[in-house]
Length: 217
Image (cartoon, rainbow, N blue to C red):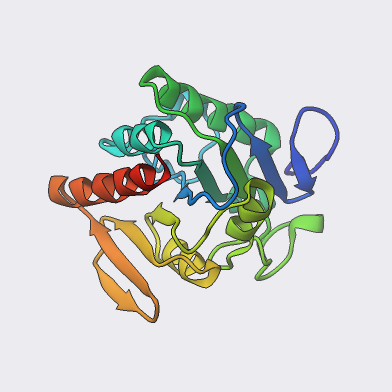
């Protein structure tokens, strides 16, 4: 059974929503953000990740995060974690895995500013058994929560993920561009999906992040 306690060390805004402010960097109001899915985007996806020792970063993601850091662009992880709802692991295991991912990034001087994780799922147990919760991607709730807490400009923000649900969440939150890991490009109403499959695609993403930072300097 998943640990849904809101007491103790876990930064739970509600039983199925983890909201963690990492570090102490201060951002001006109206700053765009770099939103990132975690499993399959930052780290290699291991299915339902519950073992920090198995965490390995995906090649190429560290420079993207580091570029956002240099440009004073907030880096925000938005991750669905249905394994908690299903009882495969609890918030304790999530905390350990997430801490390891952040540690691996920090080893390469890349840093995250906020982590949001949604554990709600229709196949869950107890208070986490909610279908189509507004915080679960493809719903935009986690991005909207980050906007409220950090004062973000979502329209100029970027999102990177490995599933269409990540792109849909970005589109519904009012973003204009997203990068789909190992996916295909597409033009949706008011939202462009760009592929992230090769070094050329990565260069385009890096240029977009650096461009956001240059406009803030």
